[in-house]
Image 1 (cartoon, rainbow, N blue to C red):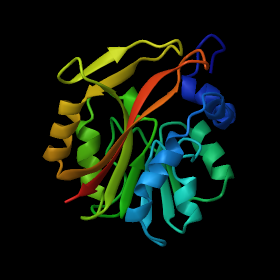
Image 2 (image 1 turned 180 degrees about the vertical axis):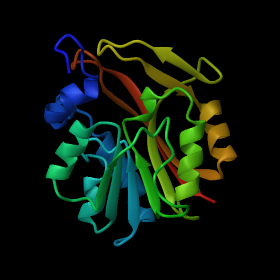
Image 3 (image 1 turned 90 degrees about the vertical axis):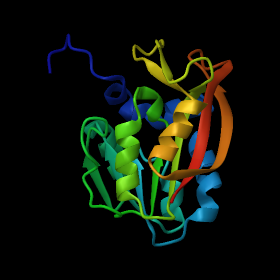
Length: 209
């Protein structure tokens, strides 16, 4: 790669991503695990979409779930692989590609800290509905907003836009894909300056009907 071509932010941050998460006092991964715990059991299969370094699924592995992971970058997958807790990791662009697994292959699906980088979530949620068994949970986070019907795009200091989705959009998304909302929790984490708690996220736990 030419030195004047800037790497995507997730490739640049892969090696220090876990430390960055601590600097932002972000414990969204722990919240997702705690909200999901009553619905999961040891030896079940869990797919972590946007697995990154594995922060969202390590706790599930510790209680006996078999974790599989997808991510767009080899750099993130390499860090996750070094932790030795997953059954399988694959590189996949989940927005442009189908999930590379058979129908009803997983008991549960988790996607934490990734969907606010995606504008239209319909294709991805349809794929989730395809690979998850009935009665399984889909646990995920978004950046919520109530000022627009669908979603809005906002620039950030990290040279990448984020997308904020409305409650109406999310509820229509769930209904279309046969997903029932069980729990939702709003969370504040530190923003760009790593001082002020001004980034709002929403953690949602849904059941596949």
